[in-house]
Every structure is written in structure tokens, then in C-alpha cells.
Image (cartoon, rainbow, N blue to C red; front, side, top):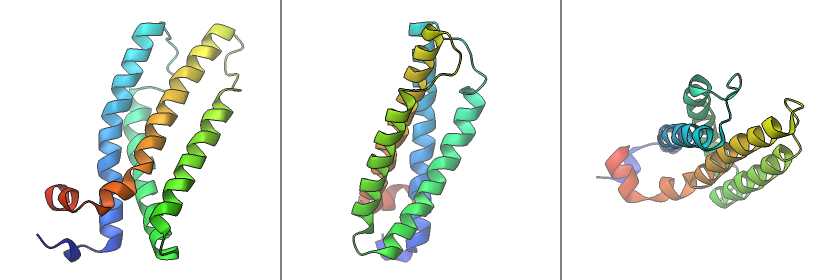
Length: 142
């Protein structure tokens, strides 16, 4: 198939959406596994519904942001990767200081759950440019 038949915006948006769907499944498995291993129960903030909707919306928005990075610079893909890795590192660092419950055990478990989800999303977001450039990915999935 001809890789040039799709607009840059469409390819960037659909790549973000595809990564979001895959990440939703990964985050759900991580959430269930983490809760089973640690016994962490509170689910008012991170639950199945919030993961399903927010992960997809977030990565769709990141796909659109990737498009704007591409439009802004010839090396927009590299800038996007640097920005997502930097943002992920900053968010994980900020997560280490969170106090949500006041109970040290619950706070530690919450940090572990949230930090893991942030890492999953950050690594996947940094992969958006790699998938975007992949001819096989575009031909097979977009």
C-alpha cells in the first residue's frame, strides 16, 4: 500500500489511538496484578472506568500533540520523544512525594500503582514516533 495516502494528522492521531488501546489493556492487567499482589483496595481514583477512558483520551491527545511537534520542527519526532521521556521522569519523581491517605502503607501502595501506570504510558508515548514511521504498522493497522 502507498504510505503517502494518509495525511500526517490522520497518521499521528491514529497511531496515538492505537497505542492508547494497547496501553489500556496493559494498564488494566497491571492494575489487577498490582492489587492482587499488594492487597491495595482503594479505587476511587484509579479504577477500571478511569483507566479505560483516560488512557485512550490521553494517548489520542498525545498523538495529536505529536502532529504539532512534527509541524513545528523537522526533528519534531525526536523532540516529542525527549519531551515525553522528560515529562514521564518528572511525573514519576513527583509521584514519589505524594501523600493521599495519611497512612504510610496505603500511600506507598498508591505511589506504586500510579507510578507504574505513568511509566507504562510514558514508555508507550515515546514509542509513538517509532510506530508512526513504520511502514508495516501503517499498512497493517491504519
